[in-house]
Image 1 (cartoon, rainbow, N blue to C red):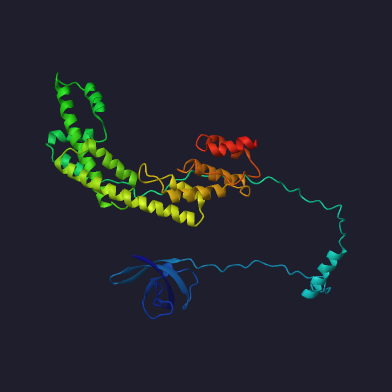
Image 2: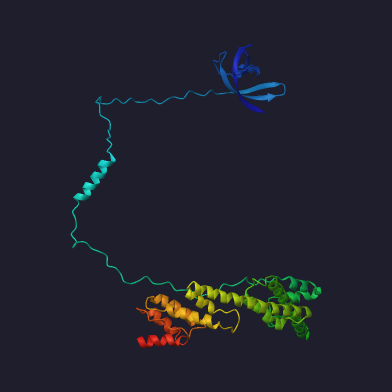
Length: 372
């Protein structure tokens, strides 16, 4: 293996060979052919060589040329004019002087006469009010049914029937009928398949309904009431087995309890909003009764209508009027609200809002008609 190393010539054994050792060390050492050395070599010279490290010693194969000394460039000396020049000098000024200087500058500025001052004219127009979103009541936990019962039902079917069941999942009988028409089947086969598919579809839908019912039962207190009602309503169609009928009866009982509980919380929320004088919130809540057909207690309805009427006064701006009118129009006390007084400034947006709900709030609409 060829390596490079630095060697020092130590002696000349004869005309053909010189002895060497590693530069700056006693070992390794050996002999080198005189023919490999450059002319004029002397004892003590250090050379860079390439050598093969063999089992029986080191054999030098070539001597590398020595590096030539780097020639430095010549520089020209610049001689100046011999004239002395002063350096740059700085003088620091105290902060106090600077302030006085700035003050004097301001005092020296020409003053404008009052007649020359120009003021920006103020605009009486208010920035446009953002459109208010329609009130949306908070919803409970949305229904997310599993597919456990449905998958178990399909897996328990005979292998030759499972493909048909999977085809019905997420599809309908009319869609299956169209698919069968495109297939070349023996006479009478499509009708038999459709008859069986209708029975199979009924069982699949019942399994899916049971999955939804399980999800509702696991979240009776938190499940969204609309989803709860939807599952109970669909039980009339899909709950056909004995197990499904038992689940249906249990859900109907739980739904009644849940509605009664939500109705009590609803009344408490309205009372709390009225107590805090949050009129619009109370009106919005009153329009979202959890119990269908339930009416507000007489004392609560009277309190709500009075507070809504007091909110409609001459001190309220048109935007506030529009918000309250929108809430009143959807509330159960819409025909009992009498404004305290008309607004001082009636905008086009307020007029549009009154016209939009004129049939629901006739007593308020009449006041605006008479005033105009």
